[in-house]
Length: 138
Ligand SMILES: [Cu+2]
Image 1 (cartoon, rainbow, N blue to C red):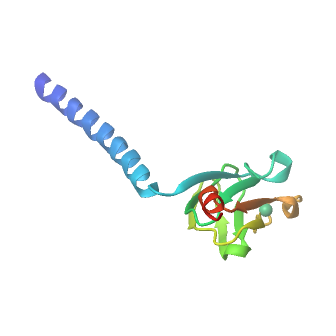
Image 2 (cartoon, rainbow, N blue to C red; image 1 turned 135 degrees about the vertical axis):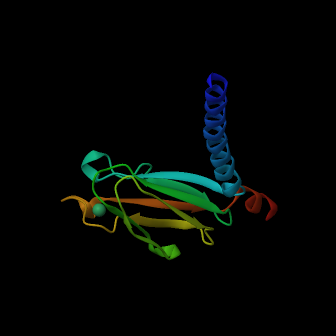
């Protein structure tokens, strides 16, 4: 009986550790080839988007992980690239994949009335020409 219990404990530990390792591996595998940027959705009085300025390279695939760390809902819009997440509930993470095809400065903002300062909940994406393209152009 004791031996069986010990065996059961070992199995339970292996199953737990295995699941965590598999999840981490899958997460890394899935992100492969993309630059991953985590953005925290925070209302202005608590600090606003973090980061509120995101630097990307034109032509380089990116994955945005937008995490709402507050107790109110937020939204996310980056209209110049046709990106909109209608609602990110408290604690949720939304994943957005895209490849910026233009250089420039593009605003992003919250789309849910989260607080009196909601209209100020904004940031910007700065897309630059990639280093490789710039140096191979001459
Ligand atoms: Cu808002």
